[in-house]
Length: 140
Image (cartoon, one colour):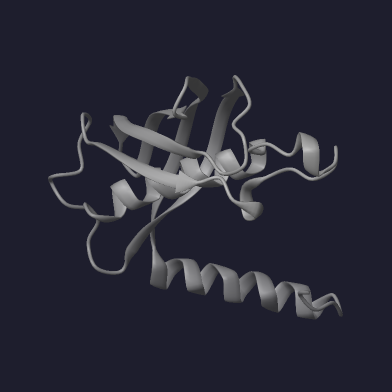
């Protein structure tokens, strides 16, 4: 991690609420920005903010999210996710995020990510895959 990774860093990203971000289970007429997609956009914004301050071979993974989806956003609108790094505790990064559309705040979250060494993560995943293979199973 670079010395620049410290509380106070902030970033905003804009996302279009298109077909890939809209719920469909209530029918096309009631399709709005879905909570899982809001979560994905928050994670993406926080990760992008962190990556700019990580060393070569590092990345970050999500570990915990507390999310309030406060209101609907119509298909065709945009949302802006504003993320702020509020705490750095070793490899643990804590962010606060807000999500706004053109009219109102529609979400807020607290998100924890961990900085990982990609080479070590690859080793951990290979070890888990080997354990799975020993059980006679294969990953999907």
